[in-house]
Image (cartoon, rainbow, N blue to C red):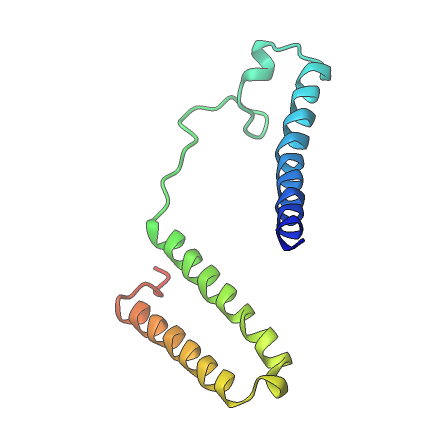
Length: 123
């Protein structure tokens, strides 16, 4: 009986995985065949405020902006882990408090490291 329960759980996951892959593929394929497709030279040109483009539109950004954004995302996601802990703090006890203090200390260590490497300077 136990083996059957595990197989059913994997079967459900497999069915949802197949649906998650199959539905977008079918929708995009149907959309490709059903949409109107009349390409022309005017439709394929780039549009910049109603005037013809006169130079390459790619602009090179400083890598610091991406690193700054990545640092923000990392610390933002890590702080999300604090909310479930804060809600269940009464039930978790002192062991969870020590683990969360270690977690926050590791975050602070990463923040200090990024600060020392001057990653957090905007310009």
